[in-house]
Length: 322
Image 1 (cartoon, rainbow, N blue to C red):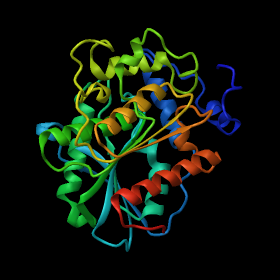
Image 2: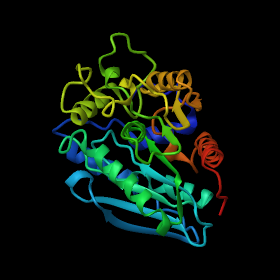
Image 3: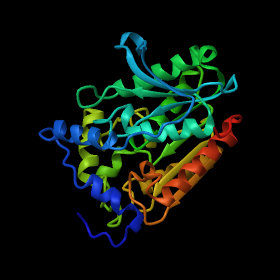
């Protein structure tokens, strides 16, 4: 573990919990188990009126059915906004449990239905498998909006880390296909650019904790099925490669100042603003990757969650604290 002096002490617990998880073909199975253990280590709080249901929705274009976990509050006003939530884990590990505490908190505060996607993982299923599954979940939420109490014109997409990258890719895909599209994208330290792996002049201050260059290299290779930085990688696989960002929905981006993804996330915010897309960017000082899951244990994570929730309320409208 690197020296921690540059990390805000409130996130030292995060470093203790995560440690230095190896990530390669030989360790993937055990690292997935460790990630799952971390995801379920804290018993979720009891939220009166919260209903959580597991289900399956049709896959995209003949792909296998997709697992979804639907969260909703009993008695919430309808129709109102909704969210599709995409978990992190580098596209190679995790599931809805990885975002369960965060999603429960957001649903309790907003009162909106949220569909969390159990997408297929790499390397077993490389691009476009995960994105196809997220697209299927979004399309299902749009088609099922009436039964879920959701206004189909006010569905946002949110994700953390690899889930943030998949959320950004979903917004690009929906824009380009001309069908129903997210009305907002909430990107929490999103994984956007495979070219970060081959950056000839990487910052010495980024990626020392939680998600390292070595882990990032493996994850991108698994997701793409080719070497990171290769020619011809499509923007839907690595959203930072998109030439045209116009016409995308209003965007919230947050990232820690020590996160490996800092430069690519800040660059996306700059390019979105230049393309005329309303964008809100938050860089949290002395903060590593993975901070969002620390609400209740780190005041800065609590503040971030509240800011993100207010951004969703402002952009999608409706809803209130429960």
